[in-house]
Image (cartoon, rainbow, N blue to C red):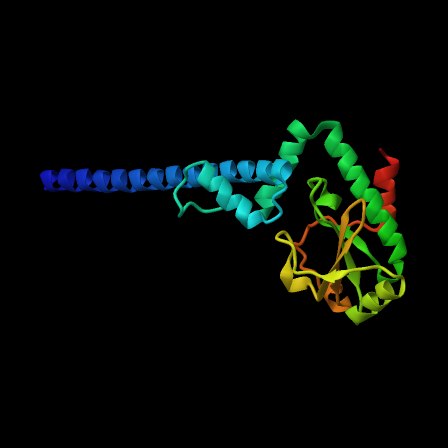
Length: 221
């Protein structure tokens, strides 16, 4: 009987060892995947910031190819790329990035004051600070009828074009997008319905700045 228990104990230890090895292998694979995602995000951020690539999906795929990673490698999320852009600017942006961001925020404030009737909020990279010099200035407007915004623009002699959502936007929240080209920046107007603004998910923590907040950022340097 003692021999039987000993054999059983050895079998249990073997199974536990195999399970531990498998678990360790899983953790190792997970760490490698996360490391690859981080490397892709960093490389994509460089392509976006330094080469003006505006299609983030393209930037991620190109970054993965440059890193010689397998085609099946999971790509980072847009949020991971945003963080990588923030890191890139902190390391390499310097005064040039600060001035570019300031110019974009000045343009944003001017258009927010011009479109005050539609309760504009500054969103995206210019609000969060990770925008590159190639980024659009994204303003979220609220309107029952998006046509009212178009009529107001046309009545003021502002040329605009209907635009598909940017790669970093949430398509489920957008009614209409308009793109206005200006000498200082491209202004992307995302027009949402009142119910969409009221029912924004609680876990949606994207920066959304009213005109007073943008003015305060500019006043603070």
